[in-house]
Image (cartoon, rainbow, N blue to C red; front, side, top):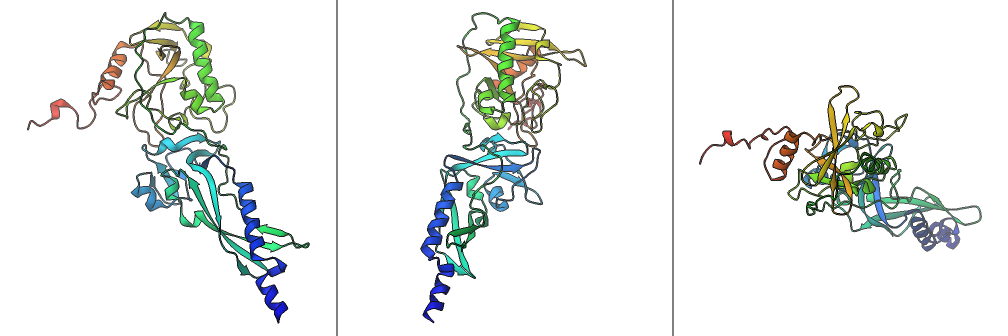
Length: 355
């Protein structure tokens, strides 16, 4: 009878403490430290996020929800998407996966062991992870030689997100450059700036690409500099032969065959110059602008409006056209107009009713 009780309490001759410490050891091995990212599958308005509680996402204004565990990040919370994979976007959840291993319980010829996952510095996204995703169980059995054997997956997250996740999730407004450029760059110098930016996009280094952008976010009160890597995730490099899976539409918008096809550089106002090109199909003049930041030239990017999926920086803004340049300055000054210079709904002074 005593032998039976011993086997029942220690299935396979393995004490509960052994099973518990084994799970803790294995959990530490498969959950590296650092910034943690979760892969959302899809790259359109709706992506798959079954790990999240739908009501929590909506109540915290993190994402819109649809049927079938599909979600769409709100503009406010898209900034936590700091990387992408070929299959989707990576949302930063927090730092350093912590695994709490509970007391094992006998289950047939082995132990069932509860585990709870937590994160340091959790983002709002992490706060909406479903309870059953954070709280799981695994089983431990004794092998032929008595050694512990694991059944179950102790990795908190799976997918192709980088480890550790890149940063840049905080939108930080900055002072708009006011320095006067020493001279207009040559075509070769301007092309070098564009090629370096394009290479960062090709390398899928969105934070590095953003560092080469003089960015104006017209959705923010602090317009200059308030851009995040998430605003670049749908920006692809200029096509280089066969397009790659996972690349967004090219920042050149299919306007030219090669970067070297630019026509030249025109001077401008506000410390900007305009790299002019001729659209390969329409033959209309288009342009991407460069801005002198005091030490270097950067590519001018503008977030004009909220997107149906991710709001995205645009680079072919045609600011060589004085009318379009003037519209941009009016918008920076606070006028509620769109990129065509038309009043946004509810802001047309002619429609205002006097008090």
